[in-house]
Image (cartoon, rainbow, N blue to C red; front, side):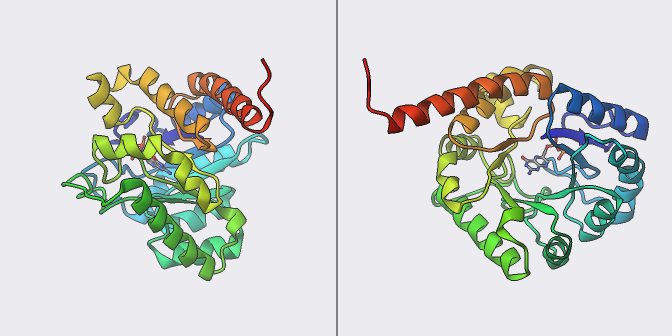
Length: 269
Ligand code: HH2
């Protein structure tokens, strides 16, 4: 899943794709690099970010979605927690909604149920404004899994089919460095929820802390995190750097496949 933020203030590409033509070109480039899905967002969710009104999100997104939806090979998601923005995006040709608040707006579940659109439910503790103020868990992997399980039950009751749903532990959303590491290292525990797991570690602050590196020197760290996540069973990697990620994931997937054979076949020497 390639990321295009049509925002002035996203943490890593803010301002770069605010002009519709730049966003469209970036999305097409990511598809050419191997993205199966492009995630279009118009509201930054970086720590401390303020909400963007639905009308402003749609003003930013509309020309971009209209252009991309005409492309035969584009598969698009909209990164929004506004059911109104999601509704307009789906009408305009988007296929899935990526909601970092896991359908906190009850209208979101109803919309997904009516349209059959894909729905990514992401875990966050708090809101972007407050989420990094001393986040706490008893056991981060278990707590996140339980919370996601509850959100799945809520949207299922609203009529969303299980097949529509993917789940995301929300790396960096109300988590310390240790929480993020533990979640990634135990990502296989989310598999028991029975839905594809999405992981977004690309360029995030925990990589900066580990590597003591600014945004433009976090690529290798993001690739390492993505490869481990896929090796442990993650199905979708959300990334700003598609070409490099696609290459890394081919290797990670091959290794995962080799391990499965090893698990089931008698050992031969
Ligand atoms: N991370 C960001 C935004 N949306 N969605 C999912 N499902 N998973 C994530 O990890 C995730 C997400 C933050 O990254 P970015 O979009 O690059 O930045 P910003 O929120 O500042 O626009």
